[in-house]
Amino acid sequence: MKKLFFIALIMVVQLAYGQSLSQNLATVTLIRAQSVTESDFRERLTALRAQGIEPTNAQRLEILNMMIDSIIALQAAERERIVASNNDILEALQAMTGMPRATLADIERAYRSNVAEVARTNPEVAMPSWEQFLTSVREEVTRQMLFQRMVQPRTPTDAEVVQAYNDNPDNFNMPEQVRVSHIFFNFAGMNAEQRREVQARASRARQDIASGAVTFEQAVSIYSDDRESASRLGDIGFIPNLPAMVEVFGPTLIGAMFSQQTGVVSAVVEGQLGYHIFRITDRQAARKLGLSDINPFEPRQTIHQMVTMQLMQRNWLEDMERATLNLRSQSNIVINESLWGPWARGERN
Image 1 (cartoon, one colour):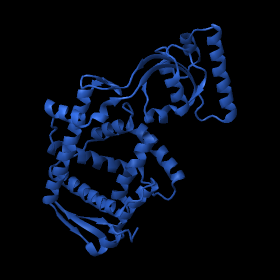
Image 2 (image 1 turned 90 degrees about the vertical axis):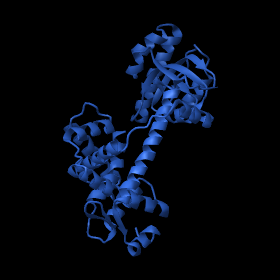
Image 3 (image 1 turned 180 degrees about the horizontal axis):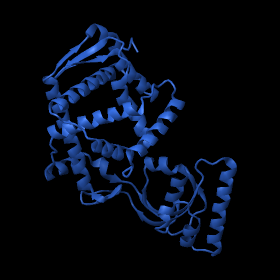
């Protein structure tokens, strides 16, 4: 997850730190004139291509507008005297990287490690320094602080929640689920010989259970490499019969789970990251979730709360778009049409 986060933010950094030896595609003025250069735009295209994305002509215009909007937002924040503190930056980095207790030095080490890996696998991508990256994060936090001041959260009414629920019935169809307890034997990153040793260990554990030498629960404690679920006697909760679960566990394991009888200990089954011995402890037939039901993917949340949060997010995005258009109306935006034309048509890259 941290790797993906850092790769995604490379695109943000490219905008601020591309070479400036090219002509201006656009000039933007809210409190001062500031340009988007050909080099800025090329850097953005390069970053996208490094992720396997070839922008269409329509997407090229979207990219240019995003770059313009970014400049306007930072100038608006400056006008409003909005400044992101060092603590604001650290909190944002902790949240984005999933490292809530990390220091700035911890995150810097993680960043440098990820940048080194990206440079090794994608040497054509010009990688920003840590200092440049940190500045780009500060700018993004500043933009967020601006919109938090400009846009107030709008909570939907109960009637709006019910309407959204009724308008999207397929979103609330819950497929069959099985509750699974497992003994996990990890082989991630191992070679063929090491995997055979892991499989042999799993087979011994299954034989011990079959012979009565140990119970399933005792085998969980003795053998399982999943120590988190081992503290719950191997319970990993309900698994829905969804394509996303196939990607997580693998088709063989998911198929075995949904064909296994409740209460029966399985054979050793290969999954995506290791071997499993499992037992189905409960089943739920396919059904439609009601607004008062628990969200199966977030047990602390009801479906009503989930829909409320989705509508609040939609409202926030709509209000942010209106705020952005308002800032644009206060700005002078000049696009060099003769220079932009070949870029817009994909004739320049």
